[in-house]
Structure formats: C-alpha cells, structure tokens
Amino acid sequence: DSGVTQTPKHLITATGQRVTLRCSPRSGDLSVYWYQQSLDQGLQFLIQYYNGEERAKGNILERFSAQQFPDLHSELNLSSLELGDSALYFCASSYSGANVLTFGAGSRLTVL
Amino acid sequence: DQQVKQNSPSLSVQEGRISILNCDYTNSMFDYFLWYKKYPAEGPTFLISISSIKDKNEDGRFTVFLNKSAKHLSLHIVPSQPGDSAVYFCAASDQTGANNLFFGTGTRLTVIP
Image 1 (cartoon, each protein chain N blue to C red):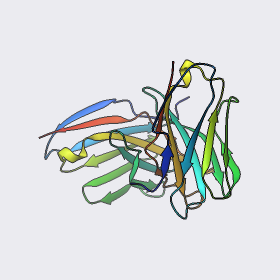
Image 2: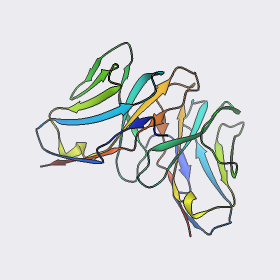
Image 3: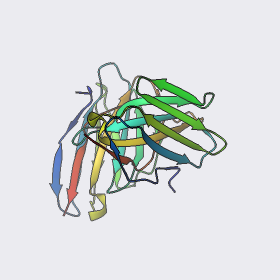
C-alpha cells in the first residue's frame, strides 16, 4: 500500500456521461498530480495541485477539470466522455513538488 | 510529442543475467531522471534516480547510467531475479519548476527462472 488511495478502481460508463475520480494523497503530502495512461502510452501529465491551488497544467482537455479540497483530497472530473477517454488514471502525491512521486493504484475508466 | 522514449516495449532475460533497459530523451532542459517499476494492478513505484550532474548512480542491484551528450540513460539490473519482472518506466523532469514528470511508454521486463 503506497498510502495514496484512489477510488473507484474500475468504472464503466457510456459516451457523453460524466464521472468523478477521487484521490486521497499520502499523509503529509501537499501536492497531488493526475496522470493518464492510455493503451501503449506513457503516463501523460494532466494537472498538479499544491495545498489547494492549481500549480501546473499539462495536456488536460477542457472537458476535464480537477480540484483539491481543504483536506487535501483531490477529484478529477471527466465530462462529455468519449471512447478515447478510456484509460488508466493515476493520482500521485508528494510533499512539495518533489521529484519522487508516490502513485496510487489507479482508476481504470472504460467508456463504451 | 513524446519527449521521453523507450523504444523496446519488452525484454526477456534469464535469471542471474544482466537486464539493460534503455531510455532516450529529447529535451535538453531535463535535469533529473528517474526509473519507476510497475506491477500489474498497482501504481508505479520509485526505483532509482539520477541528477544531470552525475553520470552514474547505484543502489544495490540497480544502476542507472546517464549520457547527457547522447540524451540517453539506461538501467542495469544485476543479477536479474524473477521478482524483477514488471514494467519499467523512465521519467524525466525539467528545470522549469513545474515539478511534473515526463514518462516514457515503458518496457516490460520478464525474467525467466
């Protein structure tokens, strides 16, 4: 157990729908990162939050949004889902933008 | 555009032999490099890292080599063990302070007993 908790582990939904993925960072970590891993792709950085504030943005689609709450957990919202959004979504945390990230087990999203 | 590339999707090695996993990068601003290991149904876990001021870093059976002029790094595992069978991701970070990592597509290592 890495200490980073992601729910749900698996999610199957239909095109056009909206889902929310949740992440609880490791105790004491202030930064949360979201990554997407599509089939045969590396982990693509989506967005980073630090202590509730957005810190960095990667290749995140406008249909996607995220936030980090006062208790430091984070949610990634994916809307108007398309087949191509099917992927593993990883959350990672670190104490402060440190280079070594601790990853959760991921949420596997399947869009039918 | 993939800034970190792992051109070998898979590698099979006999137990006890050396495993060499390779990674190339294109961004000369990258200054810190990491290897992560991933088992099925788990998230990636940090394995070893190297700063651009070094050309080698060793941790037990794992050694990472960095060739800045060639923009190439490699991970050596000696001796390889069946428990090392996993997907290995190379990652790099740049100097912008954005603190995000750029990952390669991974190499699946199979160590044959």
